[in-house]
Amino acid sequence: MPKKDLQCLTIVGLGLLGGSLAMAMRRFKPTVRVVGFAHRLQTKSRAERMHLADLVTSDLSEAVGQAQLVVLATPICTFPVLMEAMAGALRPGSVVTDVGSTKVQVHAWARRYLPDGVKFVGSHPMAGSERRGLAAARPDLFQGAGCFVTTDHKTDPAALRLVIGLWEGLGCKVTKVSPSRHDRIVAGISHVPQAVAVGLVNATSGRYIPYAGRGFKDTTRIASSDERIWTDIFITNNSNVAAGIGRVIANLESLRRSIARRDRAAIGRLLRAARLKRQPIAGP
Image (cartoon, rainbow, N blue to C red; front, side):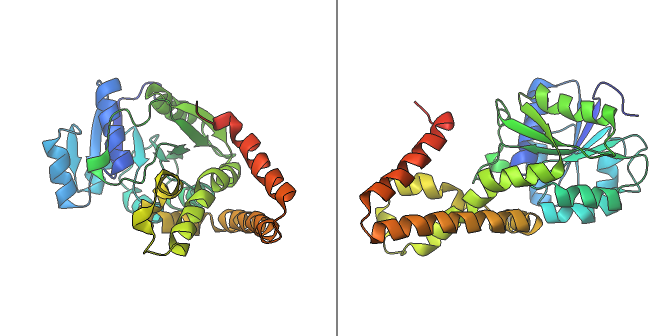
C-alpha cells in the first residue's frame, strides 16, 4: 500500500513534460527526492547541468528501484517496452502513472506488463505544446492546467490519492474519468483538432504559406508538433479519432454545399452555431 506522503519520485523521460515535471517538483515540492531517467546521453548531460533532479541516470533499474511513484513521460508506444524492462526493479507497493494522451491502451499494457503488487493509475495533464524537448520545459507548465486521472475496477484507492495529490500539488485541476471516456473526450478536443490542423496545412499550397496571417498561424500552430508523438497518439486512439475526423468531414461537406449554392441563410446558421458553441472558452 503506498505511503500517504510522496517521498521519492522517478520521471522516465526528460522531454517537455518530464523536464517540466522535474522543474515543478524542485519549485513546489522541494523535499521530495526526484530521480530522472534519460536514455540519450545528451539529454542526461543537459539535465545534470541544470540540476534537474537529485539523480539523473541512463540505467532504468537504478532509476525506478527506490521510487514510490514512477511517471512515464516518453512517447506512448515506448510504454510497453519500458514497463516490461522495469518490472523486475519496481519495489512492491510502488505506483506507476504516466502523462500519455491516450488511456485505454495504456491501462491494458499496465495490466499485462506490471507485476502484482505494483499499482497503476493513468494521468494526462493537458499541458502539452507544439514545442518539444528539455529545452522547452518550464516549472509553471502545469499551473492552472486540467489533468485527467483515469481509473478502472482494479485501481487502488491509496495509489489514486497519491497520483491526484501529485498533480493538485503542482497546480492542476484534476478530473477523474474512465480510460474509455478519457479517450473519447480528448479525441474531440485534442486529437481531431491536431488532425484538422495537419490536413489544413497539407491542403494549402506551400507557395501561399509565407503570406499567412494570424488566423492561419493560430489555426495551424499545433501542426508543428512532433510527428513521432502524434503517430503514437493516433494509433492508440484510432477508432475515436477516425470517427471524429468523419464528423468534421461531414460538417465541412455541409458548409461546402452551402457555399457552392451561395446559400446565405445556411452559411450563416453554420457559422453562428459554431460561434455560440465556442462561447464558453472564448477569450475577452
